[in-house]
Length: 445
Image (cartoon, rainbow, N blue to C red; front, side):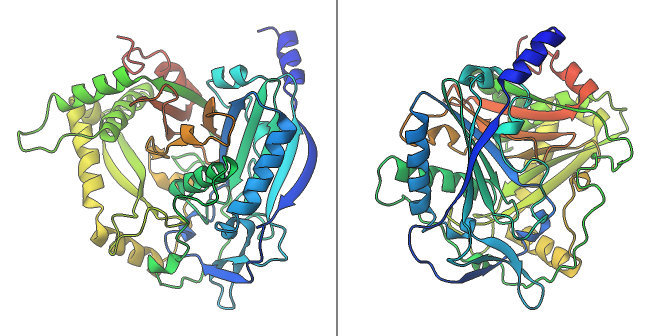
């Protein structure tokens, strides 16, 4: 592309904010306070969690009115998203809600030149940034900031919906529970399938007082260096149902023993990505590489919590091996390493992790994910393409620019349906260049 054409595209896609309003629950809720628990607190120094959904067609003003009306209704159940972060008299963080608070911030914007197909075709996040609020904003930057901000942008042929959620108060399961419930109301339902379970202290009662100081650079690279952070690139890879089945079949064709448990789709795809990213990084055989997955613990804790538990109920599961071992062995070796780490993370392990953290609280920074890490968030189990507000399913679902570092991976249900999976990867630019040319990784061999 010529620089002139680049400037032209930049002009076309400029986003102009037309209005800023706030939406509150449609009924009186009263004063509510909900303590943040051990599962929430490590994420205070994350950035706002950004999601972008884009839809074709529809009349923008009508869509905005319907979304705001639906938001007023759904906030009667999910009122915590209309509140603020706060501290009690002992310095324990909590979600506070009162009827005089502003509620959810809603921005209306326009970018006449940008089309849905352009967004869907963009394999990076370059055209997305201005479509989602709170770029570069930490969850803890301002305790008076809304916990949810939504930007509705009129595209040339549709609507872009950018949402920024404060990650200190909810995880991916809760995020998509809220989004699907909001959509259900907008489609005309009088009630939602599963109201949120708001009693966080049923999962953990320990009160942890935090003395917080901001890390000097919360997005330090995964090797801990902050002075010369590597240039990062993001890319969106689509794996068809046939490719996923082939990857899973290959990993399971070489099981360690007859008694071994089969590797899941997640474990198979995870080791496929881990091996090829490790190869693209050109690591030495003796270099360590860490695999991290942010795992849902709702059914792992004792007693188990309902799927509708609203908050963070995730923990990072870490495992490590040498790059040489990971690459020299068939893929079942790495899959077995991942499988063992996940299966070992039972209620006892979760309890031990919580006690260890409560004894010496530490706010999670991205560099804590581990050396040469591959860290997986989100899940293809989230039915993101079922978020239909009444004008059809989204044409695309992406993560924003926040909470990305070298080795961060987001998995989504594939747009093509079935068992297909879409994969967002952030890597150092040189490694990404090698990965996107790797035909075995792309399943083009």
